Length: 97
Image 1 (cartoon, rainbow, N blue to C red):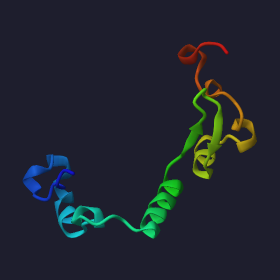
Image 2 (spheres, rainbow, N blue to C red):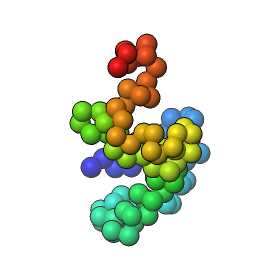
Image 3 (cartoon, rainbow, N blue to C red):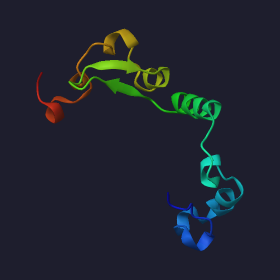
C-alpha cells in the first residue's frame, strides 16, 4: 500500500491546502488498521447520500437506483427498474434500440 502524501510540497499546487488535513486526519487504514464494519457502513451511507448511483446487470438492465440519483435526474424509480440502460443514452451515442 502506498504511503499517503503528507508534505505540502508533494501535493499539486491546487491541493496544497489539503496537506494539514491529510497529516492530522489519518484514517485507520493509513495507520495499518482495517476500518471497522461500522466505519464502512458509515462511508457507504455517506456515498449513498451524496452520489447518484445506478446499478446494472451484466447485460445492461437497470436493477437499482438510489434516491439521490432519482432526485438528480427527475426519473421515477418505476420508469427505470427493469429497463435497458440505453433508455438513458441519447440515440446518437447508443443507437436506436
